[in-house]
Image (cartoon, rainbow, N blue to C red; front, side, top):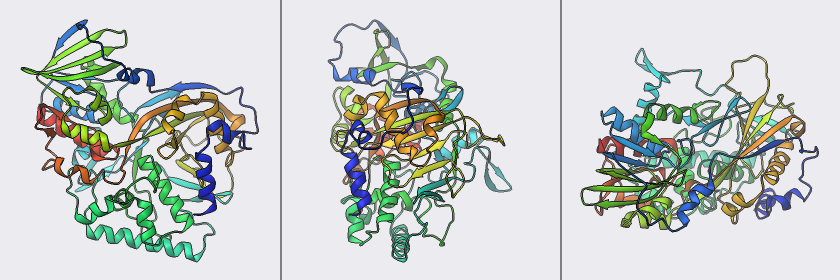
Length: 537
């Protein structure tokens, strides 16, 4: 294993305060930087760890359909019900704002994401997502071709890497690498192309039956697969580890080989420098508030059918339907009596609240692993000075850092003069020992100092220009596609993308959450939610 990776792994094993004390603290004082924790409310979600109140409800409501969970899957289910003319439903959401990992916020007057910050242009398999984009005016057919609204496409330059003391275009390390590295880039590109010839890699993947070779890939880690291919170059390994942490919340030693190959084979492939497509990332839609732009538009038509700050604690069948109990923010216990329900909850939550627990949910919860994430929004009073090399981009990554870099919320601005902005920093803790506990127990000021110290390597003027830093903690941000997670899905897959996910021992329930796909992307959640809503309308 290479020395940079060893140093990174060593840092990952230390609490933030420890590696700050090891010569990584910011040079400029940060006492002027305000902020705190924002977004998710861990205490509210942790109410499910306590015994559920066994008392008569304070209020009972009747509705035809209850949707439990207001992430993208739940919002997609609500949209499908509305499109079918079904208006008698209620959506119950834990947080104060729906959208799950696709929410946005305002920080000192500027929009910023609290989670997912872009949507790749969907392929033909994601036709329900394509329909949504057409409905929202993001794409239209012109002279027989689909044209996307350029205001919402990521402006150029899209991404850059701080590598060897300067910025380079793209995230694959290329500046000054040797012939052996370039040869391994070409070999990996050939391996991805071969995988695309051997099997179908699609997004969404949930409804796609896996080929035997994909199940074999699912049985081992991506790191083990790379070892078998003798792909051991330090720069290639860093890049692939970064891609897995970015999309799955954990690196090549944790995710399956299927997941590592799917990252490339399902979209744009992999191209060595000077070969194939120049834009490795492919086209993406993005907004200052990230995918909060999409979730806000999905939630807007719901009106009083949307009930936020509700902790769903029990979903149980009764003689003629389903009963859903939820605690409101004021402590009132609400009982919703419905003919049917859509369970758009993370699987680990569904396993706590379903009574009785369907066998498939129990089995999925036992296998599924989830990654905690930290998202920090940094409000700057002025643009940062830049180091030599590639121009400032939307996505900016520091080679070898523990984080995943940052996106610039004002990159989509049409203003000709740079000004104040928000940088959104991401860090996946899926590989970190006790990562979830550390995420929740580390004080805000320690996270602030750690994040600034990391980014200061590329931006020495950051401490002096930083006004506020808000931290959002996602304790169970996304499913990690660990070995075996794909193979477990085989008996549960519906026959088509239009068929809902249902189980014989829970006949009045349909299930919709990206956890069932084994990895968390918008297309998976939206397709599962749409299928559930359309079937139950």
